[in-house]
Length: 216
Image (cartoon, rainbow, N blue to C red; front, side, top):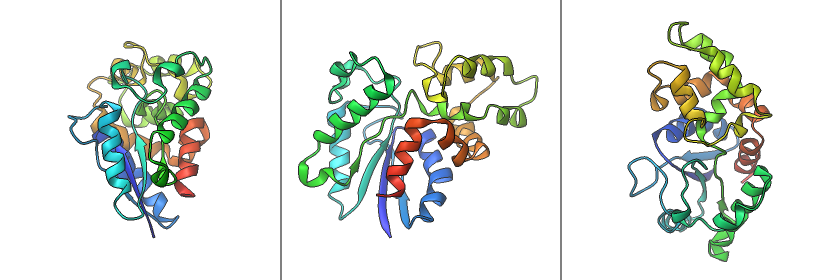
């Protein structure tokens, strides 16, 4: 059985890996481990810090290593490979693929083949817009302003394109639409209800990532 380590930005991504991806990848003969980023209180860190953890895991036998971190809130000062150059790429999917390539090139050549670079566009919560009907099954009318979710998804082609502004990022939209929304408590549960297949059908970049994971 192959060993796959997905370094998670925080407990929300970790719960998704453990509750949703783990059982699926087992069917592909892949054992998943999902540690969070070291030296972080639940959030993204500078690339140099993250790279050290990636390399450390890659040096643990023949493990395959990937990431589950959000594009949202990555700062220029974090110096992700190709970050500044990527800003001139207007197509967001081309931009992400460029970043993945640059991240891979920054890993030593003898380790690179076992590294699967990934950044979630724009953040994990965008995946939850793959089927907003699920929210109606989990929250009362008093708790949920469903129209806000409808407005968010109707303005984009795919859930991943719900943008990363401080007031319009997916997580911010959920906080406004749902009273008392807690992403750690609800995130993985909602994703489980939506189902991995539906998320893959609706989210292009995420599906590409899972395809790489299941064939690693």
